[in-house]
Image 1: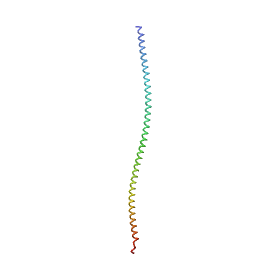
Image 2: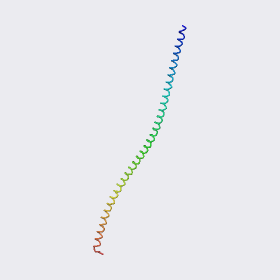
Image 3: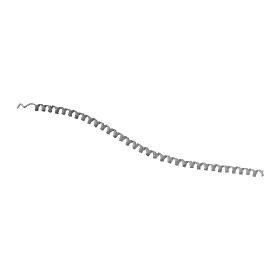
Image 4: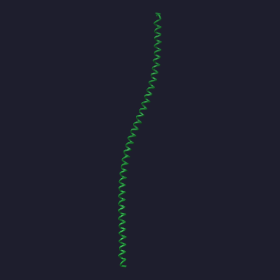
Length: 128
């Protein structure tokens, strides 16, 4: 039995050292894994920050585009309004020209009538 005690002690010591070395290995693996996860988290945070910055830039570009688009829409609307007013003025002017042409024709006719009467009156001897 005396010879068995050192053997048992040896086996217990061997088992304890195996367990301890296994725990240390497991502990190193956990630390390595934690470090890798931490590094990956930092990379992802940087990517997220860059994505957020890009999103903000794109929002600004979109806002500027929408403002420009609104300005173009307003300018087109104003141009359409001015074109409508111009067409209306042209139509009004055309009607006015037609009226004046008619009046001019009537006046020419009246002048011819009066000149004709004047000519007839000058050719006629006076009865005075």
